[in-house]
Amino acid sequence: MRFSLLRNTTLGVLIAAAFLASCESGVSPLIGEPRPFTIWGLLDAAADTQRVRIFSIEGEPGVDRPGTLDAAVTTTNLETGETVAWTPYQVTYDDGVTAHLFEAAFRPVHGQRYRLDVARSDGAVSSATVKVPPEVDFTIERSDTSPRVYAYVRGDPLPNLLGVEMRYEATNVPPAQVWPTDLKLHPVVNYPVEISYQGTEDIVRDGVRYDINMVDDFAIVEETYKSRCLVTEGNPNIALRRIEFHFISANEEWNPPGGVFDPEVLVEPGALSNIENGYGFFGAGVVVAERWTPPKGLRDFIGFSSEQGCSLVPSAGNPACTSPPIPCLDNVNEDIWSLYF
Image (cartoon, rainbow, N blue to C red; front, side, top):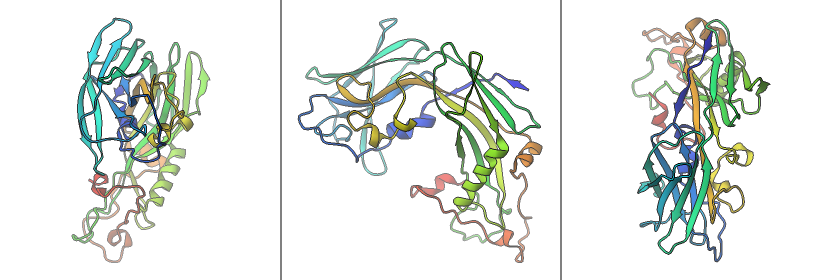
């Protein structure tokens, strides 16, 4: 079965945490630094609204400061000459840090070049020039009876492909609500597992192919669920809601150290920057993805479960019906309920 559906989603799905998360530590002071701004952001070819985060440099290049930011942001389409002014707004994070962001309503055009200018009232300007990568031909070959998936990406030229992953959106399957009503944590946890296929591509005519075995991937999903205490020997089931294969089609300069956009690393002077007279990074690209849900027979063959672990009647002698898994999740904010249904 051959599928040629292409679903573009916003880049915020994959990198909002990197570009928009609070980053208050891990930066070096710059004594007498003349450059005015640090810039984090991108042009998203799948979005109708663009966003960028701006820091003023006053001794350190990546520290948010309260009050109004002395900055005016514009983009210019270097192919057409059209200029767009961006609107400022602020976001306050859970740790109390207030970030300065700007947004503009337009959709970048594939293959065209744009310049971002961030100007201070005294005339100092930080800027970046990016080219939006060309559209790609993305197809997935899969079957309702086979765990093998082949993903093809073609382009002329082939853009910079980053964040190539299979995402398994799964839950731990509960015994059917037979646990005590005063149980502190709800037993059903939505815990997606992302498996990287970055660098595994095979070269084919006009592009690359990714060869995916979902049975092998399930072993990783299962081990992840065990390590997070989301399944137990008495309740080992994992239910698959859907699968997503996705990647970022990015501009050539988008190549962070180790392939990871870590603001605390990238804000360091010299780590990665395409900003003229400033720091940070401004990129361009689009997330390309396809989602699907395999039929029950294939889900069962891969290793997932489609059945409840218990009936609606409590069974005191069956640990699977009386002992729910208690999650031991790392790096989770206090709002743990965001993981639960």
